[in-house]
Length: 223
Image (cartoon, rainbow, N blue to C red; front, side, top):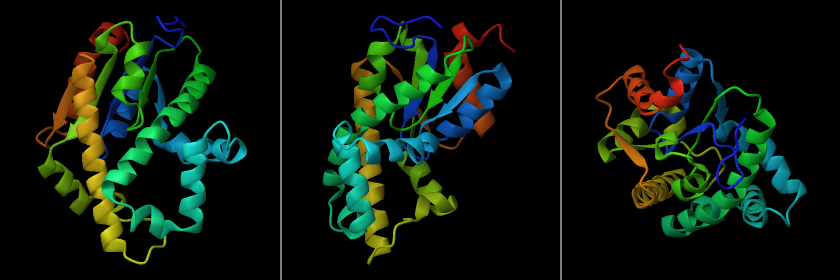
């Protein structure tokens, strides 16, 4: 495994962006087509990262504080917080959680290429690790496609925590996600990284084709 200009992994192919844009499925398809190791940020974040933040509150203060609040007062997390406050909390937490993700990726290093996906792989965090801007792409749904996903994806249209006002909580989370999607687009453009707007006109296989073409320099000979 080569190392990048900042000392981090430089053969990782990064798929970031916003919620409900197809990142996980695209990464899974690419891992099967091109024999890549796939790293799914959300999967690890809900499991090992949660436990790490519990065990090391001093190292991960924002993540730890959110977990304690979510457990003891989910209404404060989802109902009484504004979308702007929720988004700001995520921005702080993303930095800590990205460090956990890098630890995971180092452990997965085996000489095989890696494709890493997740909404916490923010452009400003990924950019310093790249040897080429073509190692990263950011998928963001259009507003119309976001609304479609909320209608059609059960996991997109529910809050799993027990809250007093589920409708308000969902509206807050949706607006938070919209703010963070805008941040991802602006940050990617500032760092010269590609954004793909997902509007549902392509099948997920077609979207994977577009991403594979973007990563062609690393994938071309691996079929």
